Figure 1 (tube, rainbow, N blue to C red):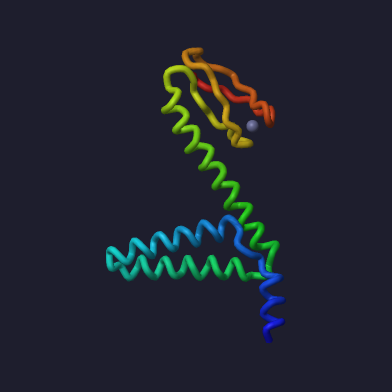
Figure 2: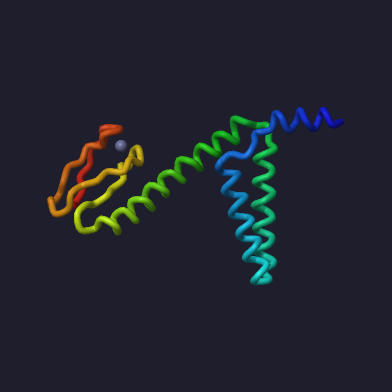
Length: 131
Ligand SMILES: [Zn+2]
């Protein structure tokens, strides 16, 4: 019996980024639900924990990887835009930061140059930016 459990766990997908983030989000929602006495938030957090556990123990690696890759793609896109937002605040006098839409590369453009045609050094995507 113990060997069967060990073998099952050995073949499980494990914690990927999507499962981890779902786990952390569910724990956070659960802690907030304790302060507000909200049954709905508590139920949502438990569903999130269940899905995170289900994904970690699943043996359908291809499907779980596909879900994780899709999540990672959007996560990186949002993360790049958040980084650029704060860089634009920090360097608003001298430079403007933009994100390449095809590869999420951060690009720095000098301010007060008018409309600039930019070529991404990573993927060679060309686009116009007002600096
Ligand atoms: Zn690019």
